[in-house]
Length: 635
Image (cartoon, rainbow, N blue to C red):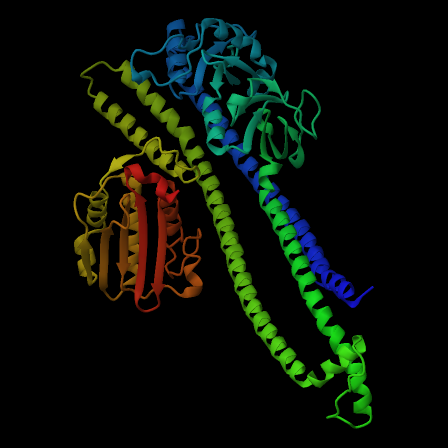
């Protein structure tokens, strides 16, 4: 074989084969890392949804337990409640939540004591809520789904899932035992709870390539994020479960589902006999790894082509140089460094002899080419280092975002628990006040006091609901357009202009009024601005200037700038200021949750927040909101 094909094949092997091996290893590592990240994310999402379902149903079950205490108030002189009193009691429980479709009272044999509370037709006004419309035939089937023995033995129980209502939505049966006086037979309060709210929550978290399914204890689908692709109570086979039953422990696995290979994460909700499955299409999830595969194949082909071209050129050059060196080495051995080789023939050796005479110039040209290649390689190294730094920064930012999300999720769980504990006694207070209001005649001197109790209890419920919003992403259903300039002025008034002036802080405002309307909750945005003003005041302990300015960076965006001239934030602390419980203040009352709340409120409004700070010069926050019709610009 000639030198030309030998060197061409050698160049291809040296350049393309290592690149192919490195690319294949990179693809395998990337696929494994991507699968691990996807599985971890799906398990985390499944756990969060399971906690949401458990919290939602626990709150409804707690409401029923609290309402049983009101039944004692319907007694007159220790006598049993009348049928009319029991009917009113069922109506009271029914209107405590729009998720109650039917509320009934059963005896120890599972038979109704009075007609159940439900709606068979649409209400004539909005004051009755948005309960599910249930035909009488579905109400008659309710006692058959109640585990009477379990309720009498354990105090409460969860019945089976059944389809009811005009829209054929699955319902879960919650039952609570009521024990009156010692000589009375216990009663069972039963509620058919519509799963439409949970189904809507699953749909909001699902996407084109992800489905979220809620299963009952018989492994039937009771709610799905893509409801159009499934039917109520359709059996679903899981890889680690038996037909007709749910697995008892969580798992994550890859298996086929609806003609697609999916990565599925399962987390049980044992308290209610339910399970949550989050399924992500493998084809969509591994798309980045597939792009890396085709990119690697492309560059291996390019490397092979370049190596073949370079190898052929190098073979030609080396062929002439080897012959020249062989002939010249003999003269050099004799000490004739400036001797020329005589051309004795026109064959290949003669051509090599002619090439020896220009060896010096050829070596110089070769050295120049090598230097040029060295410069190019150094340039490639610099570019590669920059790309590595950029990718490292992206990974660090992604890790910080994941840690912040986990911290916010933990705070949300804590807030949900506190709100749950407050709601239990508060529901009883509100129910008692409503009963007293119904019994007191008009003009009774105690009626205003009871009315005040009812209003203040409702106000506390609103405060608890605001606390729960920190644990759940805002759906936007209570948002409406409002004037940002008014929220800014109200925030300044609440912070006290005189208090700021006494602290030596000059307030500079550049806020045109009215400003373009933005969509959201004015009180929440106002609370976020108040937090930023208070932080600025704390940073300017020796006085300074507080600047608030609104601008229009684009036609459909409105930006608020909040600047102070305080002591600033250190660079190593700037990336952590939105982390929950992180604070640089020395006061014991500072919990470090203020800016976390600000970040949560701004994120829920589809807006962005950015901060810049220099030590000794001050800090600036930019809050960018979409103007009513421009919400998609910041998505």
